[in-house]
Image (cartoon, rainbow, N blue to C red):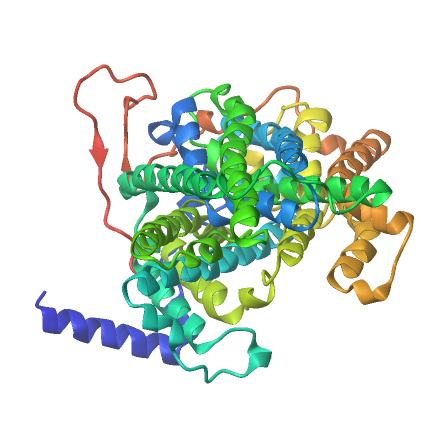
Length: 561
């Protein structure tokens, strides 16, 4: 096909989709498990043996790629900015990571054992139809995170540009103050979005070099910034001589709030981790996450806390945003450092969006609208909504608002994670009928597709946290007492109350039709073949270890957009 014919074909396709909804309908895919009259796609099928290539080292690389981002730097630094000491900030971060690691590994085992994605796994506890609600909750939070990560990346890009052309910071502002950002910030946002968009369209397995590059440059940047700030501060005072700026019970509850915010930052991953552990070779490798996440997160936290504490000595204030800190460097050497720090965070934000946010949200859309949306279309929709329809500049304009945002997302995800984990481990006792998860009128239909036990557990765990969220967003409400302190332990309350309520209701009113004496694996059913573009490493055709030196590579043309 000539270039002109290709453009003519694209033009005709766009015209058809602009005038007819039927033009958006995707070719109907056959599923290994779903009934013939059900719209589905192969992304929701059981992961075939040829694609189960992940090991503990893959999980380590995944967390290096995902955890090294600006919000991982800003959250611990924000704890110092709101009034706690550096010791308390490290403690809050470590304990928060341990708290969220519990649902992370319990839900990770679902993917490693069943080899199904999160939208399918949720059907066991929520019911075939109500699971869509759990998917929507996760989809919305992924959108928020994608929006935040993208807008933060635009500030990093500003550092790069202003380090070369300082006059870039002096672009006249023509945007009303009520909007919440300036013309210069909007230009950076547009540029970052345009740089990021084509990268997000590339399948992640083709960007393994990018994730390795990201881990190296971000870690080098963090160590360099922390060391440089300590060097500058050493001649001006003791960076560790800090006293808490809040005291008494207020200080104790603030520690709990910051701890929950640290946990809440990873509440999305603790819920949808089956999307990634479904690719595990073995069942035990995913448990290393309980070590990897806290260690990597603590490394980033220590670097940010050291740099923020030193910034207080050098500049007289706690600068929790790394791009604002880099913007303070105006000399020749400082501008060079500013450029490389900005570049590192540009790479970091794009990598995190690719590995954690875009693919996750796009998968959700394919499970909700398989007739019209595939992974590529979903990625485009997610990127446009997150970049332009949502307004992240109104969410993270201060340290307190960032912590509130992270905790606010967690109260919606905690009950979902609680139901997911308790259903698999305590109610079904790991005995799941995997093919039954794909039948809308099968074993997990419950009552019209809804498991009322999961609904009650969700409402009971979420409801009491809503007044605290409202008070945190609008302090003018003036709420005090127990309802506010319950918010201070929001993730712990939401997760464990959901577990206790769901298990209690399931034992008192058991859904016996969902119980099976032993797990029914998806591997025993024919047709689970690999239809995706993948590089298969170390796995033979029948799922056994491939001892040949050459690695098998299967390339399939990308789906038509």
